[in-house]
Length: 135
Length: 290
Image 1 (cartoon, rainbow over the protein chains, first blue to last red):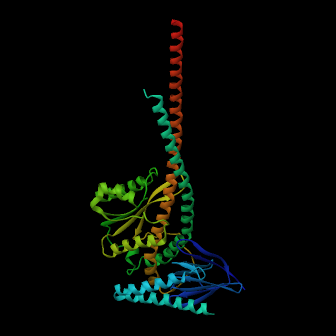
Image 2 (image 1 turned 30 degrees about the vertical axis):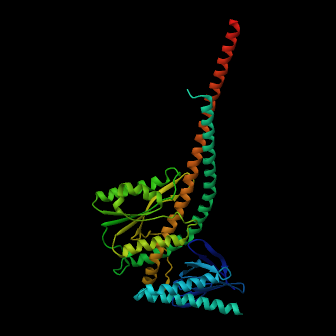
Image 3 (image 1 turned 135 degrees about the vertical axis):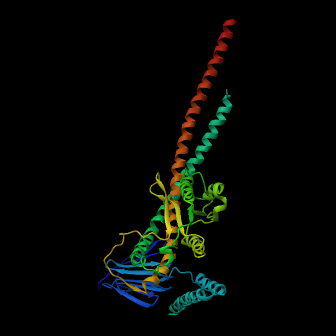
């Protein structure tokens, strides 16, 4: 299978760099997979789980929003925060969600919609986390 | 003339000072290495970000609906100077060279009849600017309690700047920091961040991208984020510059202390020998008299 170059960068570090087979990205307008030879795209990312497939192995990385760019050189993901699934502190994540729920009261109008949307994304990550843990 | 005992005390105190500056130099050297790695690790993100933005912005800048962060407010009456300095001194001219650059810019702008406001990040810059521009400092932020500079710190600053921009408090924002070239060269730099200056020709790629969602929506998401990224980069560069400046300043201080010790020891030994000779003469002439 043809591979392509994939860089995952967060503001603080280069989190991943290498040749991969496939990357599934949680886009704002829906999830999409990137294979070698994908058409050039710039897409915004919602908070979710990014799956990297290398030689049949799947690696899941949590991204909290950002931007994906596909060019002829490969795929670059600018992630706001990127944590691999194993490194994530689940208790802290739950705490963040609780904090966000608390914070909802302070928002109004369009900002409230944005906050709720963001919270929903976080909750869906949490749900996916707990469902994979049960298997 | 100082007695021999006084001189001994002075030499000992110079030696103690030398030990301190030597230790500070070594601490700065190890911290510099960490700061440098952090600054380098942040570079790919910032580079990529500006490449994507200049790609999209090139098309959007001309259109009438362009976001204010890119197109500006259409005026340049009120300037906000975001001055990033260190929290501590003992670093040579590091803090004052940033402040000097900001001060010169401020005076030049004021001479043109513009209004200037300051946002100080870091204690040292605030203390120096306060003497001259106390009323114009709209906000200052201390990063003293921050052990490890994180992206959250930069986001925090960016949020405050954005809130002021949206409230219409200023038209142009310029960021002042020290760019890290090498241990002996740190360059005080002024960078305009609002409205964003798009570097022409850096990303003049021929690929036509598909955008998801639309270009302007991506741009409105990206621009505030880019502000935080630029500030983060400035903070990291500043941090590395600070330790670089401190390291060379302390290296100088250690060398000067060594020089001083050498001179003092020379004077001390001369005086000591002169005194011995004097005592010998006294004894001999005493013996001759008997």
